[in-house]
Length: 373
Image (tube, rainbow, N blue to C red; front, side, top):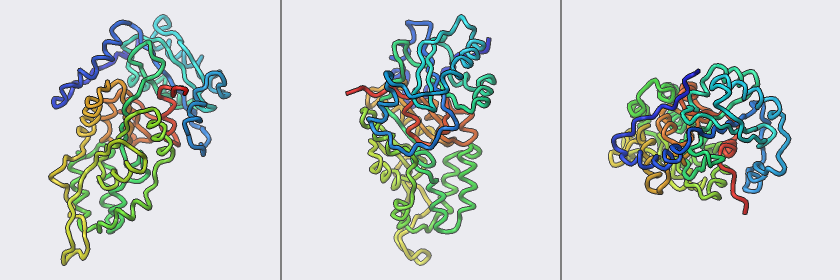
């Protein structure tokens, strides 16, 4: 039998209450030798969704009385169930429920052994071949309790650059003074995990000395908020979910984005500025990070997720994290549901789960259906 047992991470030394946060989900697990595994199939050939996912639209996606026609259900589930049975043995799994969520999204829930590891499962060769042959992406989520039908998310944390917005802001700063190539090379290496994040950040910032501080106003007019980000955050707010952006980018734009999307929190790096000098006849960036604020490193992102969960008395099993870069991996691993969104290759391989959709509203298919008013 393939070893799909769940591995447990070591709690960070500076976050002593992590185990406390996990206690409720562990207690939920302890009463049963089985868990629910939610398997969501996304068709790669999804047509572009030009409609906003308002609360009424999102409720219709989950309307069980009138499910949308879905051709995936008749072909995917039986074949996939056979693969799952071959990995776990038929006696260890059973189909609990299945339903169409949209013409291009289908979801099945299975009862499986409680030690099944979704991250390991998605890397199984049979699963990968099934995805490729059917032009699908599959997201696995092992629920913290067999009494649940979906993971009840209460806190959602997002990366900013190339996640909630399309651009890498540091590259946009580099364009303004003609050092794009040098900065982009370091950015790509950092996001692929080839360089230590903080060292690479400081190296890139040193190249940006002299950037006019007026650049922030220009970027606010040119930055592209990612498709579906506004609608996703609107729906999360409607459900009472706490939202945050944690970015290795810069506070000026993170605070602006927080206001644009109605987020509850923003965490990012603060840059030092200087008034005009003989070398730079305008207010400008010094190329240095502020010593009065913490550097948003991968560990800082992870610890911020833990800290926010603790502050709001939310179990980590009820958290969602979404990002695309190597500096998001610790945060993604810590969350109850960690999704690498349109991520770099290394991140796609190492993240708990991954999804390469066209709109961030695709994430709503993974969450607990909204309560009908």
